[in-house]
Amino acid sequence: MNRNGTNELAITLAAINDSKIITEFFESLFTLKEIEDISSRWELVKLLDQGVTQREIAGRLGLSLCKITRGSKELKKQGSVFKRFIDEYYKQAQLEEKNED
Image (cartoon, rainbow, N blue to C red):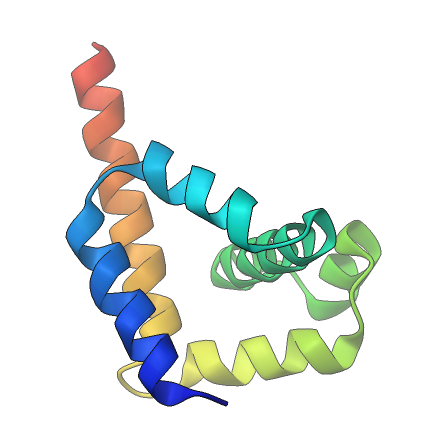
């Protein structure tokens, strides 16, 4: 894996601060299948955080238990980056709700 490229992307995405531009970038960079794979993995992390069982997630999303188990292990790690992302996601969702009111 090209860690320099990954780091460059991460720095640039963090600086953009515009979800529409980032979505457009993803749609230009990735194939539809790759976007679907990334989206389903994000969905599985959210479902794991909500306490949905691995078997139920497998049924809902059509993912292997191996992928789900990997996500579960990552979510349970101390200082989990998955948990940090989920917390930020819910924080942003709450801010959007307040702005809509």
